[in-house]
Length: 213
Image (cartoon, rainbow, N blue to C red; front, top):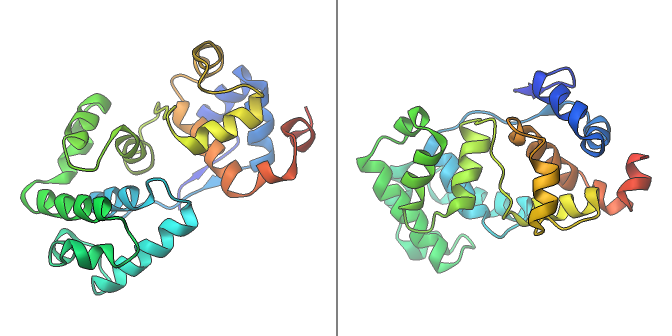
């Protein structure tokens, strides 16, 4: 599995420019993450996880895979009715979005998105039902591995940001002061923020005590 090491260029860059983030990175350590799957699987996973915890999303995704006979493809999802998809634990809107994604993928090559610039990928994806900027950003960041994605609208990212910086990510001045120093490696910073939340660091208390700064 791919790993982001503490000696990676992006990690060194971020640590030199943001001492709070450097403390977080040191606490979390090297990042190992899943890689692979198809573009369809990645987009379907993002649609399922909208407004859900990772654990809840994984449960629903597992149910859908079982209903699809063990393989999540445009063909297997397209063969289900929206009601059958919904029965896996999804809202009616998500079920329709997954069905629409399957229909689209059956007539378009999703692999072609990898050759497009970030903004063109967003434009292509948000034109599909049920896919907004958040889903497009998750696809750019986690599937295409684009280096400078900053999903400031993401609730999880905002939660970690407020914990780490003791300031809201909704404040434009705060974002400008902090996040501007991350470019062009915002994606690595975001990966570490997600990992901090998913490993329960925020539950241990105030970031100044947990991280020792």
